[in-house]
Length: 82
Image 1 (cartoon, rainbow, N blue to C red):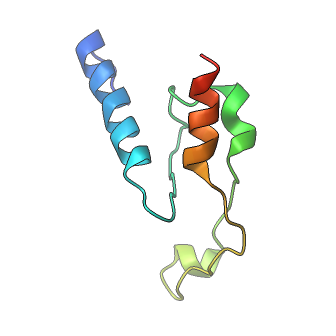
Image 2 (image 1 turned 90 degrees about the horizontal axis):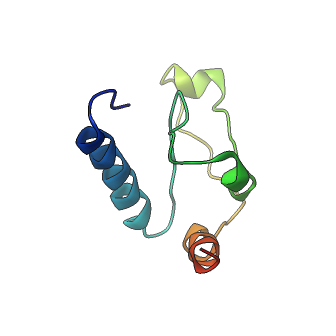
């Protein structure tokens, strides 16, 4: 997270936007702490998943999710209300 001037914070925002809008099929946001650009009111649009300990240790591949979420459609809908 940028802690400098407003130009650095704007660059952080731009990088998050680029990362989120380039996903073709899946988007995984791994953030600790959560980005300041993801406000509380949009958190219900995301599915929070915690990886099993074995995956975190690198012993096995991550399981495939059975849930499909069209983040692009949700974000477009959110921005249409602005």
